[in-house]
Image 1 (cartoon, rainbow, N blue to C red):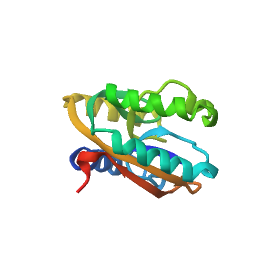
Image 2: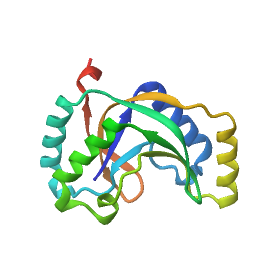
Image 3: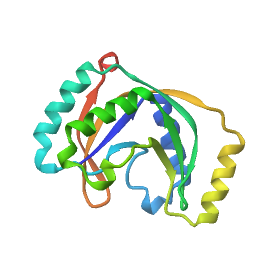
Image 4: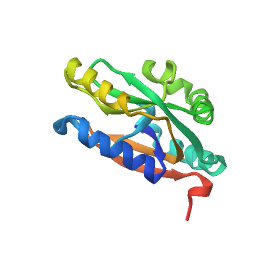
Length: 167
């Protein structure tokens, strides 16, 4: 299972628009996202859902700053700054420590990938293009999304809204 952060509508639309524009279409099987955990155990889904439901009830929306870019070698990602997001993710990592894969146990550097799996020259070109007109932007993390990995595409398993995001 994969846990991601849900964005406010404007920021989410920006990331999704750029992902559709820059990501190779045959490889773009999932929406733009910020991954908190890449591989939570599916066998623990009911407990994960209970824990995330309780956590979301106590979590205010998370301020996010789109601060720059990360060159991925074969792609480009936006770097995201948010002390509140780092704290939330850190608390979850402590709670789920026995389950974490090496990838999820290592340091967390929040980002949103808008291009990947391209030739390095194409990635460098996009990075230069995006940097030319870039200004930092702000957004809000409005909740959490829990996904089932289906060997390529993802299936939404559960959604957890932070309190002020509920209608």
